[in-house]
Length: 275
Image (cartoon, rainbow, N blue to C red):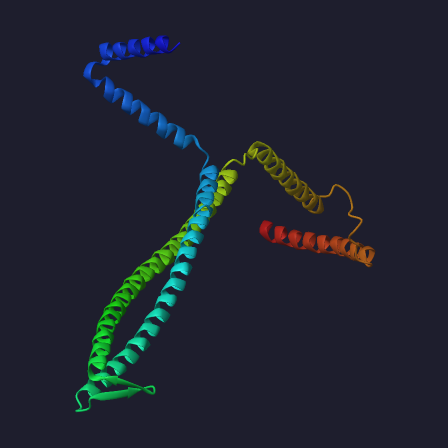
């Protein structure tokens, strides 16, 4: 099986070299990169946002680990501070005793009494030499402890700053993920709005029907108004004058008299013309 796979791979390589020549490697790497980009772009954004959120959450164990290391180092530094304080106190006491012995030896005495016991000058000198050596050793040790303390303090400060930076970065990443999620929701809302398909044809038909009804009502109203002006019979709604009979009688009684008077005047005029 492995042999067949090797043979198949070799054949594919030979065909690639045959068709593409020296550019075969470039084609392969470009195709691989294109496929990677295509696969990456095909992953839903929601999935990538959730993946980023989980990656941020996965930072918590590392942050807690660093917090534990810092807390432990703080305890060690405090213990070292107490050790330095004790060493400094002991060194101060040792110095006082060395200086006392040195002062006693500068006197002219041959013997010295300490704590109820008598010592010779040689014994005191030997004790002073021993104490002085121990003092110098303790002094060097104290200096070393102080150097160590300063170095660990600097390291502790650096660790604190790094932890604060990690916490700040974590908070910033959380804010950015929330911003991305909000933007994604806005895009989704916009896409949902754009996907609304309204049937405007029905709306247009309703508008056309309403316009037609409005026109018909306008025409009907005009017809009603026109019927009020044009009548083929006595309008029943309008009441005639109560003295209409007297008005008609008076009109026609006056009309014959006026006609006779006009006729007489006409005859006189004609006679004058003939004479």
